[in-house]
Image (cartoon, rainbow, N blue to C red; front, side, top):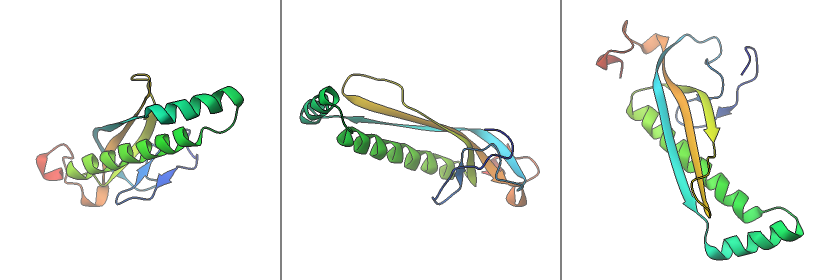
Length: 129
């Protein structure tokens, strides 16, 4: 994301943003934080969506499944970041690689950061976590 772009902020226990910073707030970057979630579509859902795909229209059941899978991946990302002691996650990226027919996989990746106001001198030290 270009400098000066408006970040997408997810409302959670800690900030999770698409930008590489938390605005003007100084932070210390930690390591990569990631999570994934996989959801299987059932046979009935696949049949209904195949019909919709043939005649046209919104594939609402798949949209709902995808949205729920993204939320689950973000919940896990947040848990991983909090467990590692981070104050926020920056540079969020969401991808949907294909894992198998009839399933949705979502991978979320970002960089854990500490706010400068609470980070020890060495942000890589165990005390920073």
